Image (cartoon, rainbow over the protein chains, first blue to last red):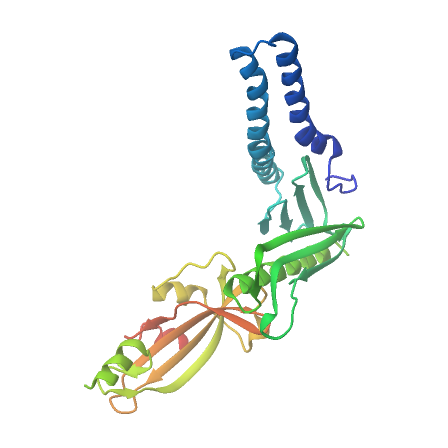
Length: 196
Length: 116
């Protein structure tokens, strides 16, 4: 069990992901400037190498860490006897629920090294947001999610996102609402089992 | 058989292919399908699967969110007595339904289970 309050963002990790490659690019530039003023292969390596590596890191690094941490968490949960009745893999959050034991496991994209396994009673509220907007034939949504308050921190897990607006009766939206409603129901059931 | 009859027989499930007439809705019953949840729908055409997993419910509200529902309808031809069972599989979402392609049983495979 994790008794720490939920922290959605690990600032050190966030800075490392964003700023560390910038520092590497700057360092490469400095080395290239001071040691390879006449150009040549060394200058190309110093200027281009860190830049390419940084771009590759920004594209692949956080996602790779996130995927590895997700796998590791699931393995650890299984080893601990956490019965995953429902697991939802969101783009930035993974939520697993053990209804019988009244436990919730949570992993957050920007805090991937902290796995929260806690009693569901710490959740004070869970609800669905269908993101509906507009009127008449323009009524639709571009995001469906379920949210919950845990230790006063609001966690939003998207079940559907798009850069377009979709009709509320579109099969994709119906499926997303159904997933969100199901997760809310599962979280509520775990809260009850946890003695809320 | 005229062209329209042929098209109806081809595309409308409740159309008796032999008598070229619309079949009557004889019975219907709503079921929950606990083995099938949102995002995990797999089409089954084996009657055994439905016999094992269908659970009778009175109304749609009895089906928890995220669980598929199945409306079983039995059609009967008023002329030749031919029977047909149609399973309408859908995901109930609040006031809406997300429908999948229906499954038909034309040889009474589910009769002993559905209409006892």
